[in-house]
Amino acid sequence: MKAGGEKVSDNSKQTKFVPYVPSSKSLPEMTITAIILGIILAIVFGAANAYLGLRIGLTVSASIPAAVISMAILRGLFRRNSILENNIVQTMTTAGEAVGAGAVFTIPALFLWDVPVSQGLIIFIVLTGGFLGVFMMVPLRHLLIVREHETLPYPEGTACAEVLKSGEEGGSNAKLIGIGLLVGALVKTLGDGFKLFKTEVETGIANFKNAVVGLDTLPALLGVGYIIGPRVAGEMLGGGLLAWIVLVPTISFFGAANGTPIFPADVPIGELDAWGIWDNYIRYIGAGAVAVGGLITLVKTLPTLFNSAAATLRGVRANKGQMKPAPIRTEMDMPTKYVVIGTLVTILIIAFAPITDVGLIGAIAIAIFGFLFVSVASRIVGIVGSSSSPVSGMTIATLLIVTLVYKATGFTGMEGMVAALTVAAIICTALAVAGDVSQDLKTGYIVGGTPWKQQVAMMIGVVASGLVIGFILILMDNAYTMGSADLPAPKAALMKILAEGVLGGDLPWNLIFIGAAIAATLEFFGLNTLVVAVGIYLPVHVSSPIMIGGFVRYFVDRSAKSAEERKERADRGTLYASGLIAGESLVGVIIAIMIYFGVNIRDTAISPSNLIPFLIFLALAGTLWYISVRGKKLHAK
Image (cartoon, rainbow, N blue to C red; front, side, top):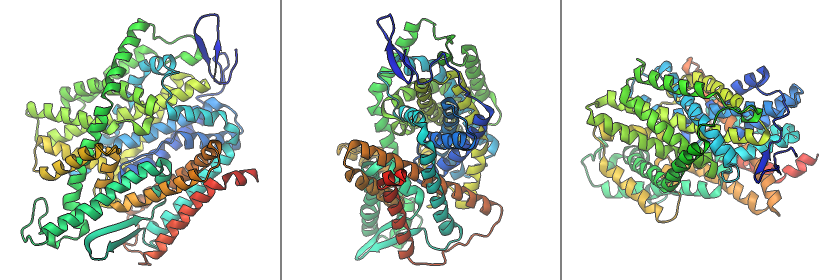
């Protein structure tokens, strides 16, 4: 037999996969050192993704940066040489990323309603959702990861396994993340901390009333643009330009002569500037577009959904109850009885815990939609990756169905909306965690990890990040205010609007339908409707720096002379970009903590110039290009 993650033939007709560390060999895995490091990184990347999700409604994968940092620390500092330890660390880190995503896509809606939100409630939501995501994925591991190893690639999980296997480069690669973190933190500190310069550049267009373009000169947005690439970044910017140089001026032009306020604004349109029109009208149009974009994404995956459900049922029947832990180390899952008991106890706690009011209806909905959508999400991320999983669409579908059921049973008003949002938040967290743990289990399967140890590690990561995510959300709200231009929380704002629309409250439905119609029209252009819709909802100031990051990635790729060189450049740039994101995000959280404890932060920048922040941002983009393109020479020194 050959080790190293290869396929070998035995005496049977089937081909047997042999992981990098074969089952016959044991290495240090879930050690105290790995757990402590994993907890720290889970909290760090959970906070970073929470900040990013509140700013732009998107999050980024933490598995590869976590794997690189883990190798640098465990191998470089502690002189430990176990790939399985590194795998446990990256598994715990992605738990923080998933919890951050699940929380910020839903829970901030409670802040927008001015509902008293306790840390206990947030912790309850993310822990129950996170545990369900892990529990419900356990019985699917053998079916999706093992039996369909050849057909479900799990791109992030496979890529992370390759990074772990090439661990001798970890120290060098970790420097790129460290440099990016320091640079991102420095720019954020000087701009939004000491207020030495503005971090937002804005200008109108001559003779074009209320047409505005702008740029948030933030390192994280540049890094996001590089990672997602020019096509997705361009579609997002297209949505922003549609809103700010088409819809805003159009509303301004046709409403200028009307002296009567038009709902939902309380002043005439002629008295509103571009930001006023965006706040009162465009955000509702964008919300309608995002809702329909999410549903379109879900509908497009319906064939996969039905095929996934059918394949799962066929697999369970084929196994005939044999999905029990095997004596081989690399095939040992968490014991079935613990999974069943844990799932049932979690559902019962959700149903009867006094901290929420979802009731038995909400708990049953969580059980049904939880397992259905977890199985779908786990299979979909195996095909298209976690970043393309329609988590938003499935969460929207859950919210709409639950709110309709609540309304039919007379459970309406604010209590009904909060309960429906709580159900959606638990489902969203479960889906995010299930998708990430699926990628992690794929990584573990390739490198030879022990499944039950990864599953336990994921739960530890959920607890670690879940205990602090509430504190972070409350800090961010106190410092920047949920729903403001500084912290729009786009996905959560959409959940709020949908719950209000079904269970009561006046909404400008015409605006929402306009956004829905725009999204439906965009679908016929072959665009990523959801991405464009997010661009419509967010200020163009957010989309434009993302596009600059996409431009950097485009020129980096185009100038490469071979596919190998292109991949090397992309990998180095991605690590540096991940550092930029983490550095700015962490400083953003630190600034929020300082504001919370009464530290005086200047309201305005010392320099009002638009040129200085613009030049700083271009220089930042230049460093990203230089490290990506010149990386090979730097590595050779």
